[in-house]
Length: 170
Image 1: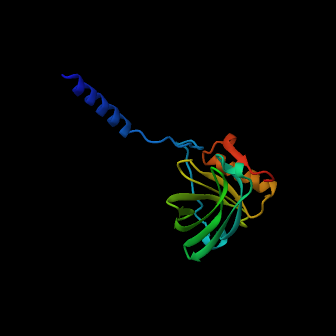
Image 2: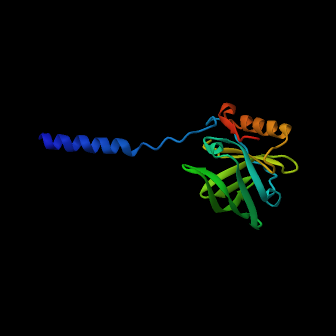
Image 3: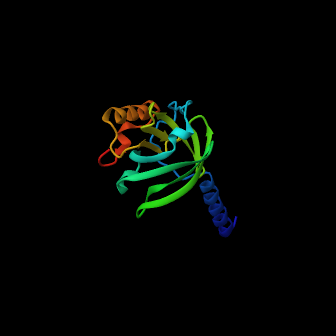
């Protein structure tokens, strides 16, 4: 075989080897852990302002973040708020659809509402793949017992308690 043919074959092998690789995404929950969504989730009661009081990843580094969920139909929302970007907090607006019991699709991602307390004062949302997990509260500083319960729900659903970061004041 010519050297050029060997070089081309080697280059093709390297390209093909890279085709099967996917970008690694940080997961904050055990992949084999059970996870559940809230079967009694009420979209109307979920609507209104939520403060992000705890999250996984760097979201809490931007300071206080909020989301306003406005019900636009029986199973749809318009969500506005702030999220943490590479240069600090950024505004966002996105439609969201309730796709099942305690399951909401927003910007192509299925969020599971794992728990809300009986009065919808605090909620735990996340993704089954563990890339995303949050504690939301109606107030910037939730009651300590509700915050403890929310942390326990994350732990029960396989999220790593050590990775949770609380927002200052939360």
